[in-house]
Image 1: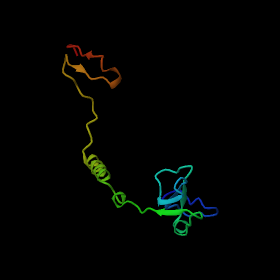
Image 2 (image 1 turned 180 degrees about the vertical axis):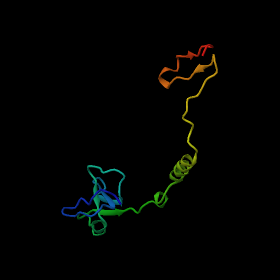
Image 3 (image 1 turned 45 degrees about the vertical axis):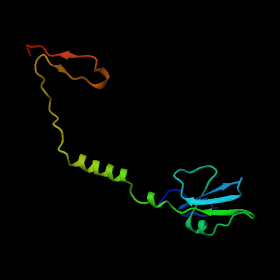
Image 4 (image 1 turned 90 degrees about the horizontal axis):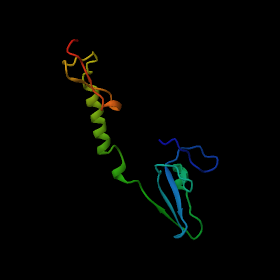
Length: 122
């Protein structure tokens, strides 16, 4: 459920649809709840979206939700599978790693151009 509320005065119900007007065509368009609240769009609850009547001389276009956007997408499922795989991996060893003498010691990403060589006397 959305945290956005119906824009009708004195209605505190949750919004389920978005109403926009196309003034050039004299059409009111009522569709699924928009992803983002827009300044010239009106969010309506189920009751007010069902009882909506357009201005005199206007037509209303009611758009149903796109079935392909209902439920989790393939990307959502792939992201979830990646999270499960990551959670199942054993933790990486945290102890200090000893580099062979004469080999460069890796530095952090900011100073990759610098190299420190361990002396043979260590």
